[in-house]
Length: 214
Length: 306
Image 1 (spheres, chains in turn blue, cyan):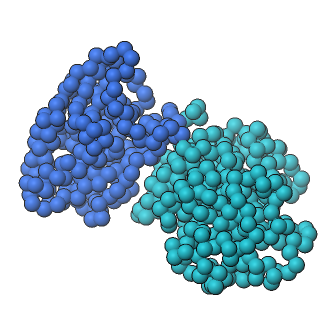
Image 2 (tube, helix red, strand yellow):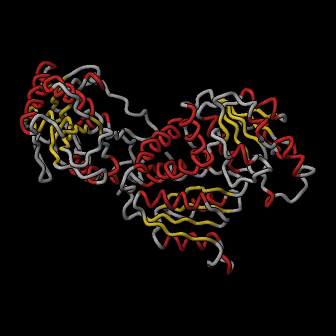
Image 3 (cartoon, helix red, strand yellow):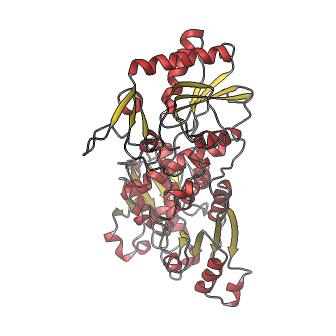
C-alpha cells in the first residue's frame, strides 16, 4: 500500500500517537495540489458502485462488504447504506485488517494494527466485496486475500475501490472503480473521508512521494 | 519501543497502550478457525528457561507459534547448563544459531539485562529472580482493562509477598505508568526496604483496603525463596492476609480478584474465592497468550531500526 492517505492512517509508528488522522493542513512550502473528486462526485461514484454491485450479484443477496482499514471501512459502511436503501434489507459490512499479512513488514518498524470485524453471518459461501480507498500496487489486496483465506471460504471475492491510480505490481484488478486516475509514481493520491478526516475529498499532489515499500 | 523488554518501567504510556491495543486485536485470532498469523514466519524465538515454569513458557510458546515463528525450547535441566556452562556461553550458542528473540527466565535478578548485551536479537524478560516479570504485568493490565473498561484512575490493591515478587514490582511500575493507583498490602517483613521509593502507597491492613479496591491481586507466598522466618505461621498469615469469601464480600460489587498463579489454595487465596465469578485467574492465562503475541509482534514484526 503506497498512497499517502494510507500512510497517514496505517503507517503509525509504535510510540507515536495512534491512528491520528493527519488533516490536510498545508505545510510550509505550499505543494502543488489538485482536487480530483469533490464531495458530490464521491457520493455519485459510490452510488454508481452500489448499483453495479446489485447488478452483478443479483440484488446483493449474499454480499458481505469488508472494508480495509483505515478508509476502506467507512467506504464499506457507506456502500452498505446505499445497498440497503435500494434493496430494502440490510447488507452486512465489516472490516478486515491486513497488517499482519503485509509483505513489507520488515521494511519499517512494527505498526499498530487496525480492527478486524467480520459480520456475525460469517463469510463462508458468500460473495465478499473488499472495499478500499485507493488501488495502487495491488499488494494490499493480495494481503487481504491471504487474510480472508484464514477467516473462511467465500463463494467469490470482488474488489471495489474509490480510486484506481494504476501502477499495479501484481496481477490484480478491481471489479468496481469509482474513478480511474492516471498518475505518475511521483504523485500522491490522498482520499479524505468525513468519518476519518472531517471532510470528503480526493486530492492529487505533485510532491515527490517516496515509494515506501509496498 | 525499545528493542528489548527487560523492565515494565522501560515502557512509556504510549508503548504500553500500543501493546494493550495490539493484544486486543490479536485476541480475536483465538476465536478464528485458523488460529495462526503468518507475520513472524522464518523468525526464531528461543525460550531460555533456567527456572521451572508452566504457564509462562507455554504461553510464550503458543504466542510465538500463533505468529508462525519457529520456537526452540531450552530448559536448564538436561542441557549443558547442568554441566556448568555459563549464561554467556549459552547466549553465544544461541547467537550462533540465529535467534531473533530470546525469552529468558532466570533465578538471578538482572540476567536478562546481561543477556541483552551479548546477543543481537531482542531479549524478553520472562521473570528474573525477584526483580521483574513485565509480560505478566502487561497481561494483568490487559485483564483489568477488559473486565473494568479502563485503567486510568483504577484502584489496585496488591497483597502478600511483595518482597519476593517480580510480579508486584512490574505491576507497580506499569500500572502507575497507566494511571492506576496501586496500594501494596503486606506484613512489614515481606515488603522490600526501598518500597518507599516505589510509585505506590503501602498499607498493612487488608480489611481497610478492600472496600475501596477495584482490583485485588493476591501474590503467591514464595516458600522456595524464603530462607528466614517472615511470618510466625502459615495459618496466621492466611488469617491476616489471605483472601477468603468473607473478605471478598468487602470488595465493591464490580471488584475483581486476580492471582498470577501458581496458587497456594488455602494460604493466600481460599478455593471458593479462586473459583468464584469475580476471579480472573483463568482469563489471565488466556490473555497472556494475546499479550505475548503483541510483544513479540512489536519487537520482531518490523525492521530493527526504529
